Image 1 (cartoon, helix red, strand yellow):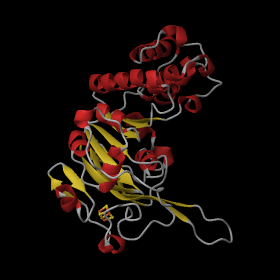
Image 2 (tube, helix red, strand yellow; image 1 turned 180 degrees about the vertical axis):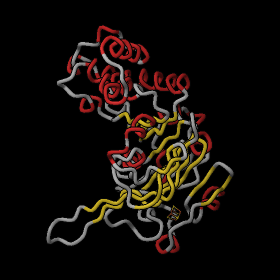
Image 3 (cartoon, helix red, strand yellow; image 1 turned 135 degrees about the vertical axis):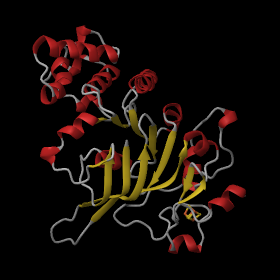
Image 4 (cartoon, helix red, strand yellow; image 1 turned 120 degrees about the vertical axis):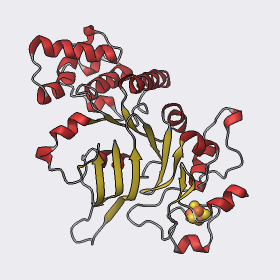
Length: 321
Ligand code: SF4
């Protein structure tokens, strides 16, 4: 459904008279998501995961590489020709409050994509909006309310109703529950899981919450400083992580004891600036296993098992130790 080939996204943030400053947000990543799959992109803030989500939907320009949606190369699709893309793929943002226009009632907010992309008007349009609200667990009484009259969970449900209004195949969900109360998070996650299986949706789920990813996604890709460092089936990666960065992320999560990955070093220090990433393996400044080779040579991407890939020179040694 979605294929990212050697995708790079760099931003020029140079200030006049101060030389060139390039933020290397995403650097040559490859990711394939099959139809109906839920794949997670995880990593700390600043790892580039949200930029990947935005690039996949052409909300930011790419610097290099290709984006294929359902087999069609959309990398250089001009803004004026993106209507078919918007029908196929939609995004749900982290903060539902700022994703909804405070001047529009819920009817108008959810109807907007339908007005832009379909011939539905009048009663038929209102009926479709009611249908969509029902899918996300809201009643018709919400139609004429405004966003400030809704709770955080209700607002996110409205955003999801709007995102699925055109029956898209792919949803990019960028931290969709992190701005919500914990009790509401659980409801929205349960609802997303049901929605994905009922509608056969494909999810690119961006999150730093590994427990949520384990619940919702069958495959996971771990990002560090603009690169994917480990990828595989969620249970495989979570129970036998091979990259020291994945191991450190997992060690910080309080899992039920039986599933707690044991004995991994916690993460220390901050993620380096993507303006000036470290040489060789970009994790070497924080990696407890870094050796001379790590500072000089970037690790290649290789398969340790058919569905478990990693970018670390010493993944096998670390796994054995
Ligand atoms: Fe650590 Fe070296 Fe592996 Fe990078 S390549 S994760 S620095 S051991």
